[in-house]
Length: 299
Image 1 (cartoon, rainbow, N blue to C red):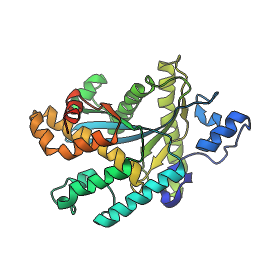
Image 2: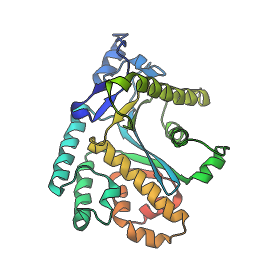
Image 3: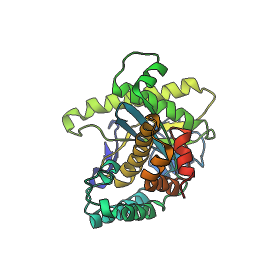
Image 4: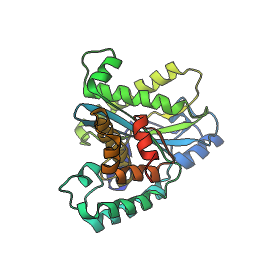
């Protein structure tokens, strides 16, 4: 297991891995990503201008299930750490432990009177990251089970299916030889006793999803990192971005599906809709046209 300082961002892998090549392509790839061509499925066989980070999150609210993805260009370690420092300073000023939007928009939020001010400063920090896009799926459980043609499934399998369905929408918009790193929020204890068991399970789960993509799109040559990448709640950048998109998608979609008038929703969530519009260069893949139109019409 490799980790950045303070256990914010890390990957799970097995220790018997060895650098398997030292050709020019491999050396250049490692200088950027720290990974070798054969660390990917399919292996990297030529230089690519598209090295992409996919940041995923899951949410459930009143039987509405959501998976969200954020697409961002590859972020170098030093740049990521600089953003982390700025966000740490920001939450310190406002007395927060993290950036969790359910808490921020709670009626008892400690920054309720300064919420708009905080979010404006948050957007200023995040604006240092260019060309981010977001997309999501948010539907009620009955609808999802009907689409999966099953009467019952675990939440884990449901989220797994939603993630790979959403990921398919990502890859069709990228050229061949694009390189993908997939990030998930940490859900497991990192105790040494359970680490190997967890690692095998998560690597197997990721591998099965990649195999599904390769089998469904055999003509598409993309390279996906074999190892699960994770961020903890201490990772303020990825945890806040992923939580933002999942919260907006699922909370607002539930209200739309419940028949709440769109004008009322826009008024209630104006600051969040504006935040999405200011941060992301493209949000057209969010869970419904209604949400996209609400964001478009927020000035």
